[in-house]
Length: 159
Image (cartoon, rainbow, N blue to C red):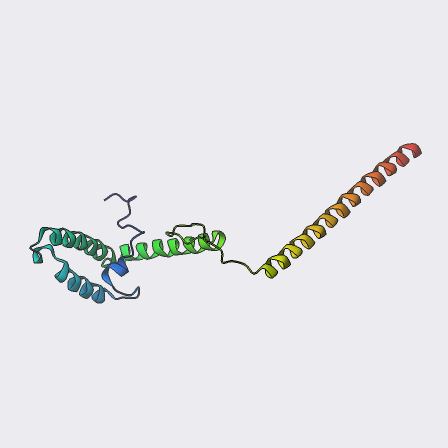
């Protein structure tokens, strides 16, 4: 393999594939791999459909074992999934969407009419306050412009 290619897929949780904790030792990983491979080996299945499923499962198990059994690759994999977890948490915090889940429109439960009226009153009050602040700010800016222009004219008259 080239140095630029990764030896694993960071979107697959190999710990779940082997059903071991993140803190599993090398011997625990080997034991879990052998146990699962014993049941998923394609030669144990006579039915063609079951054999195909077993081949796919065996490929997953082999990929997980190849990554988790080598310390350098496991370290790199752990860093990649930590980085992915952090970026997913940031994405969820700022968008409200959970990565990997469909972000659809959710129906709101019906609102109490009295609560709806109270919210409308609060919205109107907030709008009036913002408008008053904007008018006060605009008036202050206009007064400052007039005062500055009068000062400039007065200085021109003096000199």
